[in-house]
Length: 345
Image (cartoon, rainbow, N blue to C red; front, top):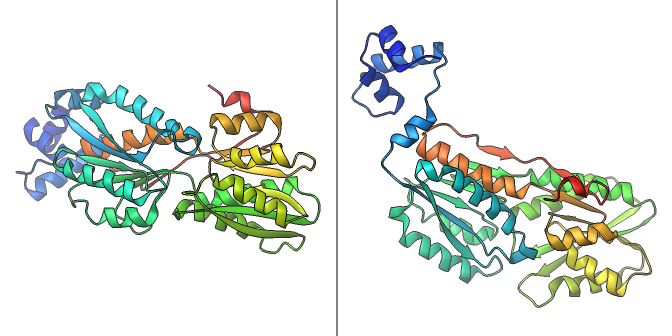
């Protein structure tokens, strides 16, 4: 492996000059910088990340803006588990995190969390944002100082300046769900799609993907129902409405982690007829319904890995000053009761 001294000898400069080029500390002529970079490339030099990080005296602090962990059937505990694991591994490199939680169904709660984050903005070196309240997040992004890089987790905001998005391809996720529904349903009938308010871009993308798969289908009737998540028992009410209005109902697509609430209602009030249910995420309640057959498929977006990767991408971008992929897409895992054992911890 090449060393700084070898690079310096070949470039006819000092080791200190090579170090300044690598760490972008200036005080090097353009001609010298280009020569050093060419030799670095030729020798395929890789800096010693451990030594570099341990030599730093600065503590790096990342602000984490996410919904309360218990929301959506404790879904948010999954990415938070990955965040905590990554932070623990990076603690020796002087990386710390500060959490700012909000109610994902309350713009007021979101704005309060953002306000608290902005009050500490001088102490933060990077942000990890779960922008599930799309419109409120767009307003918040205009207030983030240009010097402060941020990354999106789970959801995204189009045309923002985030340096990376960690999550699934939401549109293809919807297409996959529709293909699974098509495999399940063999007769004419209605499939209901449950949308959620407040609006979330990545949920909208899932729904668009689902519809796109059935574009030329004539025997399946697709109907969209919208729930207001701020109401009491929204999924209970909407599922009751769906089954009441559609005597030919054969399937329900829930493009978020709340499929278990649909399955709860069907199991309690509509057990006489099989209604296929497809949802998302390996939370406890969804797993229980998957095991007993009241949920047929769950799409896993590897939420814990999303949290873990997000912190390491922030570390790479902010601390190591290395280029990070603009999109890091998670695999779309199809989970059934037959293969569930391979996904349970």
